[in-house]
Length: 418
Image (cartoon, rainbow, N blue to C red):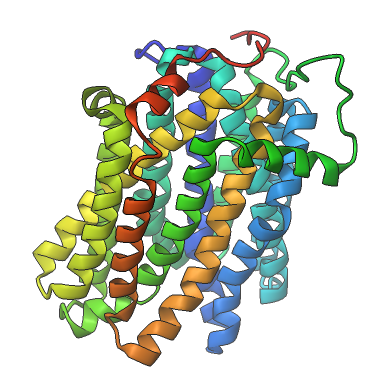
């Protein structure tokens, strides 16, 4: 890439971006396939439940695998397993033998692999990219994933499904195969550095999970970021879970208008990701985080109080920009502060917390809206965002964040080969 990130990162970025496109196609096609087989809401909702369940079950053990094994080879194996699973599913559907049970099994397997793949990819970034370019690298990764998963996968997945119910899953298999090839082209050993050789490494998986959790609990900045991710994901998912009802009842939007609201958010996310390193350098990581928390509060206020499509659309766009910046700052801080031998576990802990927040939020949004009215989830989100901002404002002070950017990595990692 022409941004000083190098050819190794270019391969990693291309692999991650293709993987995001494929995952997005499956995300769109799965509920369409289920809905074509049954009109039972419980079974249709089961597609989402099966997709989220692995994140709660395997995120923490997956982080241990990432820290135990060569991350590059692990990503290749995961992609190849997913290729086989999706090829079987696509073939079964195209031949008229595929059913909902097979789809659920494949979704479970693919999303289990996604957890480990994502944690391994994030753990490789600080090895293949110079330390001072982490923000730029994470911006490219976030922007590519948002563009593919949130903007292109939706219409492409719907179009492919209209052509043939098995087509999206077949294309998904192709994207994972290409991802495996790109990762295989990266040379070098990407095993985690163990650190101090005088300290024996914990061998039990449970012990290594506890080791990662204990280390994270002792890091004030990263611990606070993880808690923020969990709390804010609860309120965000609660808000988005009933957004379709808000769009119809208060904004008077149909299905196209509702879809455009997500386009506004995705557009902001791509813009924030691409310009993120420059914005962060301009206003500092401290104020990127603080302003982002205020944007969270502003989004909930706009959704709760406004009946203007323009105001809501702009609020979602601003939130998308904030989301892109937040990913860059949080990932870069974590990569800067976490020792190489803990990168996988700390990354997967954040994925676990985020998934937990999503699951709780989806249920909470429906309960609040049913009990107290359609705007209730947004008023609750506003209160939580204001409370979180007040409680964490001093944690992300300039001195603490500056130390994170200045401190060298705890352990040197082996250099990759292009």
